[in-house]
Amino acid sequence: MNFVGGDFFSTLNYSSCNEDWRTERKALSLSPTDRVLCICGSGDRPLNLLLDDPASILVIDKNPAQIHLLKLKVEAIKNLSYEEYVSFLGLKKNANRLFTFEFLSQFLDSDSKVFWKKNIDLIKKGVIYQGRWEKYFRKVSRMASLLRGEKIRRLFNQNSFDAQKRFVRYSWDSAFWRTTFKILLHPTVSRFFFGDPAFFEFVKIPFETGKFLYDRMLSSLQTYLAKENFMISLVFTGRLSKFDLPPYLDSSYFHAIKNRLDRLSFTCESLFDFFNNPKLEKFSAFSLSDVTSFFDQAGFERLLSGLINASADNAKFCIRQFLTSHFVPAKFEKIFVRDRVLELELEKQDRAFAYRFFVGKIHKA
Ligand SMILES: C[S@@+](CC[C@H](N)C(=O)[O-])C[C@H]1O[C@@H](n2cnc3c(N)ncnc32)[C@H](O)[C@@H]1O
Picture 1 (cartoon, helix red, strand yellow):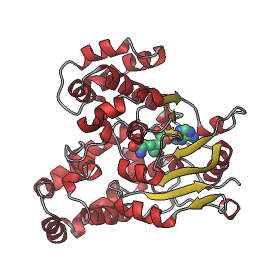
Picture 2 (cartoon, protein in one colour):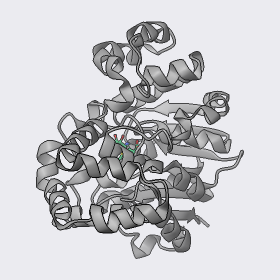
Picture 3 (cartoon, helix red, strand yellow):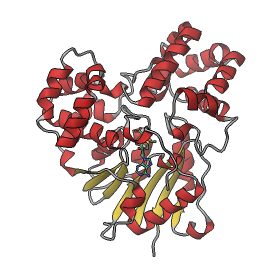
Picture 4 (cartoon, helix red, strand yellow):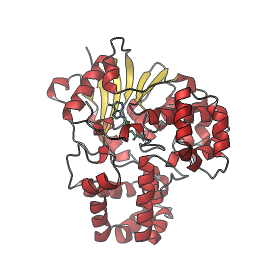
């Protein structure tokens, strides 16, 4: 059950990383016997989860653009050196991306090849910053820089928590800034400028979105240095911080991930169609991102039913919740056994600061 229309599900919406890989790994604590079903998005989550050595990861997304992006990332990791790979994707400057794409295209399936040839401009500009979200972050960061460029520079120059806390308290946190946030993040404004339904379609707190995100961001600035927070960096500089790169873009993990790429497989379809497949295989872990932002409560419950069908007994799940307020209905409470302590811990630790969690195990018996 998905109520979102337009071209949203055929264009590239997520291209770099907007979920904290540390909390995802902690939530699922995968092991070599795990068979994972994983929402694709930018493809960062499945790539990062390979570090935990699962037996397999089936990546699903109903938007073909997201699957094409992951396939491109996979072939780039497989066939390029680390330096060539990150500069091809856009982490560093590169004038030869079209040439590299010509080389990589021999490894892509025909649908992906056609897609990227049509969207070659995204590759030319450095694809990890060409998703709808990433472009939005760039706009926000430019606007923020006009409004308070000097303060943003000072925020990212902080080297100690104590100094950062003082700076946030006395210089950063102002009535003007709070109001700006409230206005910019009001669902009506984001609908106009942005168009991601996750921002407005099923939001239960329309007038509080800006305040909610502002308060969460402030509390994150009390916990992590701004320059060590990939999300704060994306919002205020439009780029990932070199001090907090997701593993799939970090040289230390490049080879471990490269060696496990054959564990990934892909399917481009809606989760609901997937769950209806009579030959549905059973998974021992579900990495579902904040896919629930695209559903209303009825859709969320339909997702839970699908998960029961698709899960092995005691399967682990991690679902993020962005601005929706879904709940597990009484009929499912004994099946979806949530680890509330872990959920709160993850919520506090998550550097992407906006998410709340459903984490636990599916007890079918
Ligand atoms: C919020 S995004 C995940 C983005 C993620 N935060 C990231 O960092 O990449 C969720 C993904 O779920 C996909 N999606 C939404 N509804 C879906 C459905 N019914 N079945 C399969 N995928 C769906 C969207 O296309 C999107 O790529």
